[in-house]
Length: 330
Ligand SMILES: [Zn+2]
Ligand SMILES: [Zn+2]
Image (tube, rainbow, N blue to C red):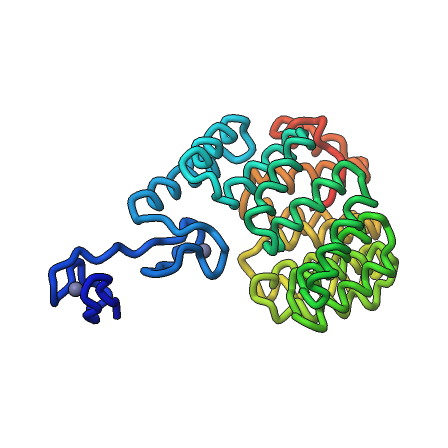
């Protein structure tokens, strides 16, 4: 219900004019970031952005989309500046511009830009994450640490901030401490992104059994289901548990029989085990289905080199760039 500012009559949300006195009712304002709509609020209750009239919101969203489509091209900066000329306090435009400046290695400008976004929206944890990322890229670890500690002082139980601290410690190769902060974060909110970060820290810390445990948690996460298998394989390969890795590939392929790329993983494991004929069979199966699969061709060429089958390689070389022949990770 919407109250008429002139006579106080209660009108329906979709009414344009007051049913009692005919006063033109104010239009709803919209958050350009998340679409939150309100007749009374000035700022979005979810993202903290300034709410805009419908026409302006539409225009801004188009400009943001256009900038986004340009990806990391220099031209996108001009578009973000246009957005900011129209809505100077649009913090997400500032944050996007900052990410772009970081990519373009303009670190000081990137910092200035994210600081402006944080002035407007100081509790946005993704902006805080952006700022610490800039420090880490600049290898200013102490600055990153000092900043995240200030943020944590005012919000010691914010799971996102605790994860960011874990990320900073990980990049400083202080894996043991990093894992403690990931655990604190996970106690508050069991977020799969944090579990992945913890798993990677555990791998770097050579705690493979614990890393495998993290992997098992992620198995139930639909958005990670193929990541589960590839991560687990990666850990098994580091541990040189090849038999387990092969079994896992079989399980993975049986549950996704149309995903031939799984056979590439399997071939790579046989290759590392120096079981070249078995590796060859895997790559050939992939090539039966897609004869020009470049990855499979390159892998096959590698196996043939190991097997000393020069004639067979010549055939493949005509299809791929010879410089690409070397085994790599998928
Ligand atoms: Zn009225
Ligand atoms: Zn919003």
